[in-house]
Length: 339
Image 1 (tube, one colour):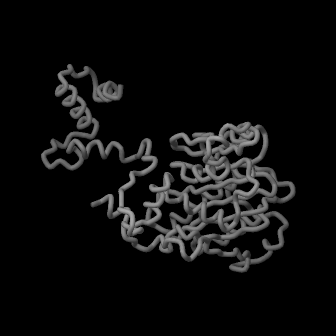
Image 2 (cartoon, one colour):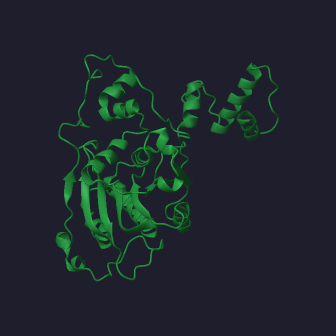
């Protein structure tokens, strides 16, 4: 019941699995591209905060093509895509992965190295913090993440390039918009159809990258000081900058906040589709293992610490298999089990 009810609740979650996307967020980038033509003429693209890889999937399919014949073309004629994230990500065809920190200069240098010294045409970032439910805190952390993405973008993006990033719209986002407007000729706040109306999530589409004269990219100061001689910096209050807001996606597209029946097409029977790419090392992996072995909330538990419970679990498993339990501490038993 759980699987079918989840599919019924979120239409884009179900469509993502049916079409082979790793996450429903792939439709957000696709709908942004429909509106702004993000991929036109792009030969080098960077996906920041890429895991689990749905936006990298979109870049790979759109820029490199899905046919094997195109994969056999000469390397210099193919688009180059670099995905960056602190977490591990399952491989994708045509995507170079960097497991690194976007706040480090070394990460920017490695991106340029993969592009053979050339800057990127497009930088996208769908990164977001683990939300706490405290909206002011979540908006602040998201703003810092966006500024970190902007910092590394100034290192790797060519003049005239495009930057797309997630933003949480709140009462204090005017400063963020004005920061972006310093570096880009046009900044638009867009809301794709696949993004829930109940969410404060939106995306800033920054086009025509043109940093101020004399600006030197650096990672030391995420908040800029507005010392550049730009006209709109002389404005105060809400008139400091006005950013266009645009809803993306055709009105006939599916509504992300609406509940749809499982059988959309009366001529086709509903069939459950598993996720394309399950998490590699999810943080709840240990909890699932404990729950499977009835150790997560066992009323008859002796109250042993977690390490001792795990040790008892490994020892009993080895004894049931007719093996002599490994000697040593609980850590030794865990290492032996991992082997």
